[in-house]
Amino acid sequence: MSSDPTAWICRTCANQHPPTAEPPAVCRICADDRQFVPAGGQEWTSLAELAAEGHRTSWSEVEPGLFQLTVTPQVGIGHRGLLVTTPRGGVLWDPPGYLDDEAVRFVRDHGGLLATARSHPHLCGVDAEWSARFPGPDGTGAPRWVPRRDAGWLLRPEGSVRWWEDRAEPAPGVTLVRCGGHFAGSAVLHVAAAAGGRGALLVGDTLMVLPGERRVAFMRSYPMLLPLPERYLDRLLAALDDLSYDRVHGAWPGRSVDSGAREVVARSAELYRAWLTGAARDPDQDG
Ligand SMILES: [Zn+2]
Image 1 (cartoon, rainbow, N blue to C red):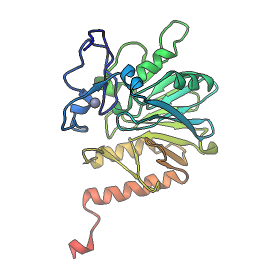
Image 2: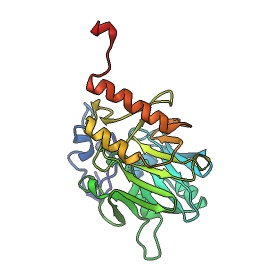
Image 3: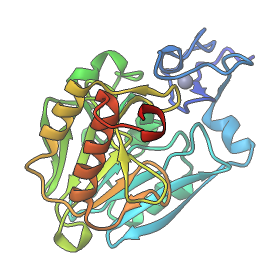
Image 4: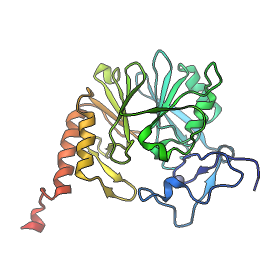
């Protein structure tokens, strides 16, 4: 194994760790009770190794001015990055765990990169690499917006981190909103101009867009199936309450609620609450 410092990428979650000669013993993200280490044990890779294996980025337009970036074959859990283009540059939401020159060129051709931001610590991917590829006049990379409440989960604190508290606006009309829930710093990105001006939320899995695209869920852990306590659900819903939106874009390709999303969120929350608290009944079991 090379002794040159390598920014190791966890094969399971695709989050990149700071450069070290040898890979860490464990991935902090995967060792947490919201994630898992595969039965076969911790595995690491690197950008160079992923490139040599033939991974490539591709992109497509999700709606005018909003593009998804995906990696084939998938890395980690295969989530999509979403690039919100604005007149001042793009905001890249939930960067995937791989990038290549073609992806960088695509972003450059669509106005450059103003900032990165993420829904929660699992979906940072290679955000530090994205930042470094788009340095400002002083040579510092593009800002990476990280909620202070998740400071303990930041894997790559070096460079261009921009801390934020409950709300922040990395670009005009593009607002980070801290909701908590899955993590204390779990967030959504509100894009006022999206959905034809009706507004959209980019949610990662702060809310999970479910199959059928007319329901969302709220969990502490999706892979480990841990529910979210009601008090956290209440805070999450309160954080969203004053936002205008008609659409929700989730963490995976195709997982978007195209219209009526405010009602979908409200209805889904009441269903979730009913089963969480036991207010809902299954007549086949309760008689
Ligand atoms: Zn991991």
